[in-house]
Image (cartoon, rainbow, N blue to C red; front, side):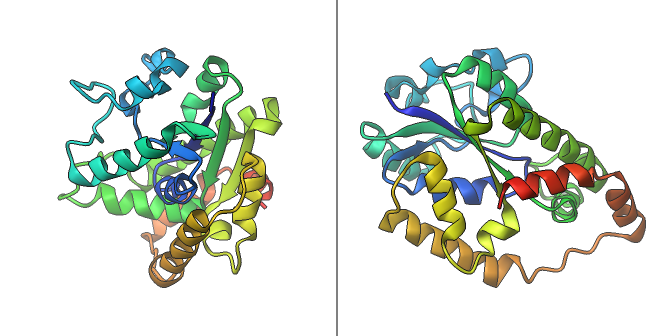
Length: 250
């Protein structure tokens, strides 16, 4: 039986980019928010290992568990690729942007592994602000702005650090800028050691591509917040938790 793997991080922290890299490994079969509608506190008890059995994992008929389904061509191709390596996978799992689900998953799954990605609060807050103030962004709630981001950022760090303290061998931290802005593949090799997986051409190529995208498109972006908002973010952020999480990601 494969082990269970969850790529976890607050929204806009790089979960998608990390999941793409890790999911490119021939022995990793990851969903993309496959069970998104089960993340809510009232539903998380339903997020159990049986849902990751092959026949259930790829059955989207009448799905009320996610909005990211093979009905959309890009996801159809993605899940067909995942299906092709499912039988030989060392890990099956999902990408989550609700760190609050981690304690329940730690209880409900047999020794699940968590890859937790964390990102500087200013960058997360800027991304939340940009989406919240974009009237054309129907996938984001207007109240989830930069000020709200700090609250969720703090809470996510508390949860991830708590689970890591309880299960130190099952949690690996990745710091966004240190990982994707690396000059070599050492951060990737650290993650592979945690997962006890070999380096492959597929994951090496995916990591190189992600680093190139970060260097050319992500890192040069300006991320300016209005003065009062930037001051609020800086003042309210739990910097001591951030330093602890970032240290664990190196």
